[in-house]
Length: 65
Image (cartoon, rainbow, N blue to C red; front, side, top):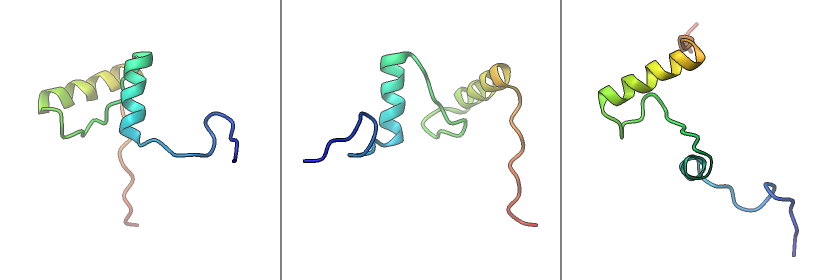
């Protein structure tokens, strides 16, 4: 039998599970601005909230040189 400190080793939870637990346990909401489960107005709201709280996003860097 192997023992691991909490948070080390064992099974890794998927991102959606972590997000769900974060919301239910801590009231922290993690939303990707391009989440297709949201309607267009909802995605725009997420973008505006992100910009208001954290500033405008940097443009994605091109992978072509």
